[in-house]
Image (cartoon, rainbow, N blue to C red):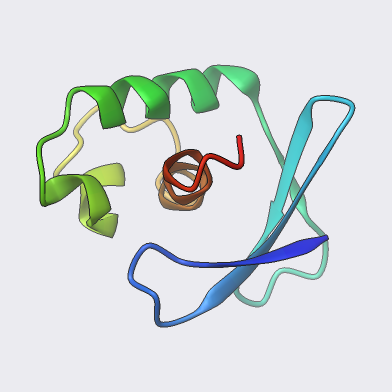
Length: 87
């Protein structure tokens, strides 16, 4: 697994992409979680429809700011990986 800073830059998380499958691990998680491809697509759409400086704010990628957020836990991490052009 690779390490990446969070959007806020105050901590890090782990990620891997094997055979097109994204896994991330953060906080006190003992095992990584698999991120579904549809979540990645939805977060990309959110990024494309966001304006600066919102694009780099963690709150842009979870509720309540994003009412239809598909997963409050993983979306900020997925956003960071997209913005860093890792995925």
